[in-house]
Image 1 (cartoon, helix red, strand yellow):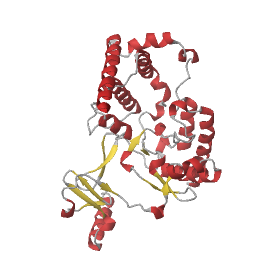
Image 2 (spheres, rainbow, N blue to C red):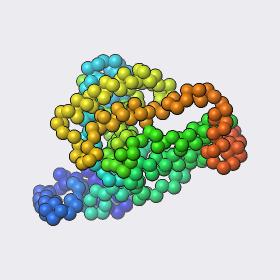
Image 3 (cartoon, rainbow, N blue to C red):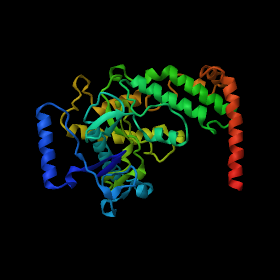
Image 4 (cartoon, rainbow, N blue to C red):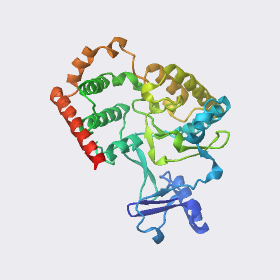
Length: 356
């Protein structure tokens, strides 16, 4: 693997000559004996052939002999229990492997100029990148990490607020604006109810944040062979680990909860079996908890699926939203009207763009 980060170039040690591999091995052993941090398998290597390419990351070349994207056969194969079992087992194995090492903070790993892996970057998820690509200011410095679940949740809520404020088409009309603002205000109030206090300070686990069907490579029997788009890997709260949302092939806002739960239980059975095969719990000290247990508790607690847990009547009660939206921010009425006007202006510009 070659990686270009600013002026630094790295190559996987397996791709270097024998003498370089031997030196790296001795260096790692020596540092380990001294109880010092050990560098990764990526070593500095200045290669003039790649000048002008810009930043890139190449881990492995995947050809058709390794399989095909899960999305290519999903529609036909998803009704086959045997294929699902193989897929769920592979996904569970991947999630457990990634979660086996505990981390003290929430964030993302970087490779420093000496080839050491450091937990020194904000948790760069695909959702975060999507917001910034749309020009929405998030005000999250690159080097920001989080030592508690609560601090990270507050940051995520701030990101949602920024999307509402700065995305020109974030609301469709007045009713939609009221509904979103009320939802944001409610989340601030109840968010602590969905996360366990004993896990607030970690430990945290490495997770894939873009585990969609297009990024999963499987063979004919749906055995998982590869996973792509690893750049969206982040260190996150354990309670963020959940089964994929696409199990029922339904969009999130149209998801049949009972149908999803049936497949979720299938997935969790695979997760529990893989944990038992490992014979011991992950080395998390006093927090030694099985990941499957945390995931099941999150489902029962409502962390996975929030509504309707408090009052079913409020789902159809317009007065609830009309009262609560005013507590999202000061001058909420003014903001609501400005957003509706902004949406109308956005639609005009969009129409003009397609007419030219």
